[in-house]
Amino acid sequence: MPFVTVHKGGQVFRDEVADNTNLVVRAGIRKFPYPNFKYKCGMGKCATCTSLILKGGENLPEPNWKEKKTLGDDKLAKGFRLACQLWIHHDIELTQEFEGTEAGAPEPAPAEIETTTTG
Image: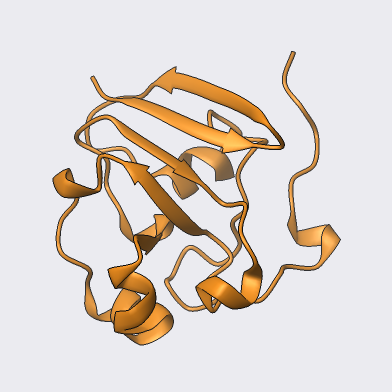
């Protein structure tokens, strides 16, 4: 089973997930990476779940048409992906902390971000 590592606020959160896992689906049902993960629509439209892949990107499938349309070739080339469009089969390390304009993703309103922390 793959390990997922999420960098947020100077901390590192790591957990094992089942093969063929979608991180947005997991966060939506309040499983890791919840609450340390930004997401909203889950449809590849809003870009709230835009993530910079730090390690493991070589194991991801090629970006689909939704990622190409929402992020564009330039952002994809820099390692940005839409987490809602990824099904995890291998270890991956990512962050969602970057300038919103750099990734082409609008910063979500505070009500759209899960802000609780795990113990």
